Length: 72
Image (cartoon, rainbow, N blue to C red; front, side, top):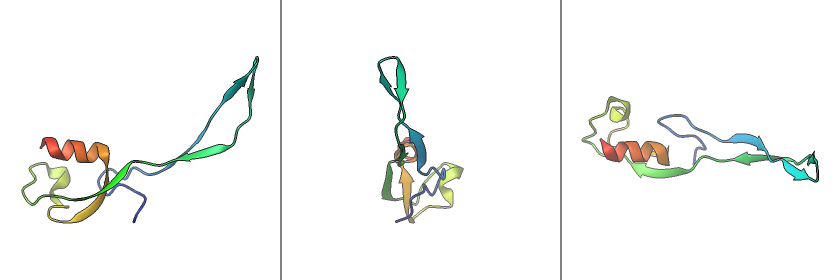
């Protein structure tokens, strides 16, 4: 399973957490945050041009793109 959205190409990001300890920040390790990717089959009768190339295919997409697809 690819770890990137097929439509918007969203992928994982490295981030840092900062914990405050008294008056200073404690150094904490990096943490990888993953996009919320789901498997879906794009319907044949999509109206938006952004999704036309994926019509009738099974793809991995982020939930933001899936929500936008359902509104079209």
